[in-house]
Image 1 (spheres, one colour):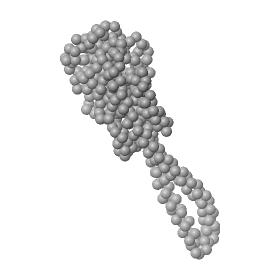
Image 2 (cartoon, rainbow, N blue to C red; image 1 turned 90 degrees about the horizontal axis):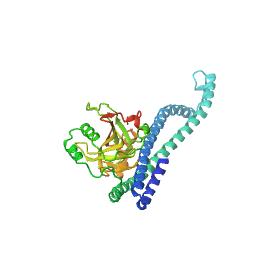
Image 3 (cartoon, rainbow, N blue to C red; image 1 turned 60 degrees about the horizontal axis):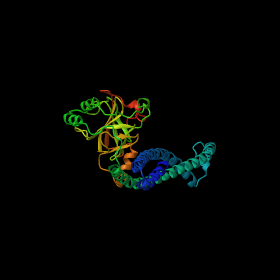
Length: 355
């Protein structure tokens, strides 16, 4: 419910973002709020489904037991003969049975009341799920508008401060000659720059950075994937058209297509460090732009889902604990000097997170 409330606020904020002087910052905040709300609601759907399943399992387990006891009591109530003649042990056995049944009746009533509350809880959970789906459908329409508006606002804004007077010729040659991402990044780290990266204490921020995109870490540093390939970075599963932002003030050292990695963004957050992001569908900015922390640098690829994403298949996938739409992957690599280093210790959401 809290996530739904936050999502409604983000939808309302979209109108304000259209008129703000710094539309890029406002739209970025709106899109981020939507994506966080979407993730929270997905988690809520999953937890609600798990709880509903637990209640149903308990209900099914007790139904047979209670049904047997009720059948015995019903049979005894309908019998025309004296109760003391029904028990094989005679009057004493009948008396004991009567005492047992008299103690069972209140317990049965208590069980029935508990089951009624659980059935009410199931009805409440289903209502929450339906309400969440409605909010998500409305939010999807708004966030699609926000992403379009963000792209327009970035193309219309004035030039950002730059670290370079123009795109270095050697960068063009490096792109043309690159045969691997590692070779490209190594060559890029050796290129001269005119002024240098931002002076913020990047090393001191270790352990406090947010991932550049909302998603789940599928592969960690040097972890072997299903094809037997190891990569010196993180592979993050995320939704189509998800917003990608810079986790730290940085200079754009390269942006654009590279080999078969799709669009690649190489950021310089500090002297001697490069942050490589690969797999974006759209990239913003130009080489040399100086970005503030949290600035948008692009959108993931893939087809933006419509309202149908939140139909039965989406709910079922969320209930089963699946990725529920995280069909895109962003590759994140952090390099210090000429060598990659494990990025996980730098970010807050990667410890023990494997999706």
